[in-house]
Length: 381
Image (cartoon, rainbow, N blue to C red; front, side):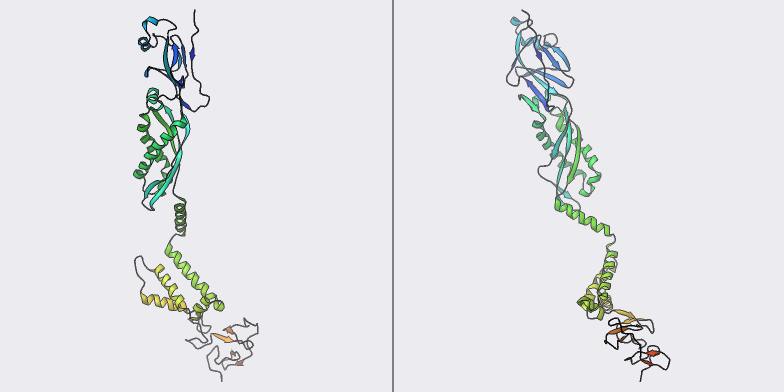
């Protein structure tokens, strides 16, 4: 009686299975004349008594001793003929490219950075792979498993990637500041390193991508601080600017604060010395020291506020009279007694109009309470 030949095939609906065994457990009973269907993206590996008999490519294969000669020795002569049963297993291997497989570091990679000393780096990315030697893959990886998916092998491949990547970073990079320009180069070199590791299991790495290599958060903050310092440019120029601004602000503060009073009236000698020292360091040549005398002179100059004499036009220390020509540098308001800058028409404190004094022999007006003529300096009797 004619028996309809059985069809042996496998369809992967999940898209994740790399290898699938028929049957999943034990050995199956096949007959000569059975039809084995292998699709374009598959290969079928036949096993009998624990040994691989043949690897079938895409197409429909009829199991006979003619097209699979190696089966001839497996079937007893006494049972030869169409329909003779024999026990075997068939492994279907998915030959497509498995994409978007992830890799990443579970623990940070310790990296010796030339600028930041020792840094712990984390890295992650993706890769794609495919099976190029079905028989080798089954013998080395799958074994006797009923099915084998990408999830089963992904962890194993990740460990290979991380081990080789750590070694590659140490050989090709000196500082993480060069990372942005080396992602493509590192990816190409890494893929070449992985070739031997993958090929001994019948696997080919098709693509390898590095998404990011990042230092710890605290190191990233230090890098941001360093970038901010770089924006300032010449630190010497920046220090000179800040020192000059601080001295000006303190002098303009007047009597409103201790710092302003100290610098403005000459009592803030200590603050002046500190500022002078900072200014001297900023203005000194590279590697040069600021002489003590120069620092002291700068401190004294910073401590005493300078004003312009209305008579001779020279810059002199603030006081009541010009030490050069004797003319008053300020006068007192006849109403409130507060100091009024020389030449002022109104008191800045109470608004009283200045004037009403006597006439000098030279014809100039001498404000009330003034002992010397503001034009000729003659003493008022």
